[in-house]
Amino acid sequence: MSLFADKYRVESTRLKNWDYSTPGIYFVTICTHLHNNFFGKVVDNQMIFSKSGQIAHDCLNDIPKHFSNLNILESAVMPNHIHALLNLSSPRLNFVETHDRASLPIRYQSYHYPRLAVKSNQTIPKIISQYKSTVTRLIKSKTIFFGWQSGFYDEIIANQQRLLIIQKYIQNNVSNWQKDILYSIK
Image (cartoon, rainbow, N blue to C red):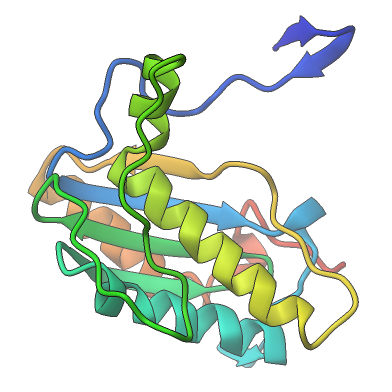
């Protein structure tokens, strides 16, 4: 960690010099604020969604409806985080305009901050940003408090063996909840 304005600053977990618009398979984990169990609880190896959890689940499943170049190979909504294996098939941002969920606007181009514009227009971070924004907006219309942890964890899947390991991990996440590193009784 480094200091900025006399405060600790968390370094980005993004792979340096990687274009997150590159076609491939991405394993993404997004956590709730302070790992609060906003999305429900695990009972008898079953995820029982709260209203917020159902919103997070529905919006996650809706992502491919808004981005035609993306498929979700596997996903899980857990009490305090979500996992998704995202298969990006083309670098272009192909999106469908909808009325009930957020879709991506035309790419923003900054003449003053071109590096920032390139980084902020990469496909995977844009999709995650839109997902988090939509879930937050829909949940906050029904409850007093909800929040995400800033950023997200990602892994670029390099080979078929790693893909199978991650798929199995996601599929077994609910049954292994109490052993999970993100397990919380909050």
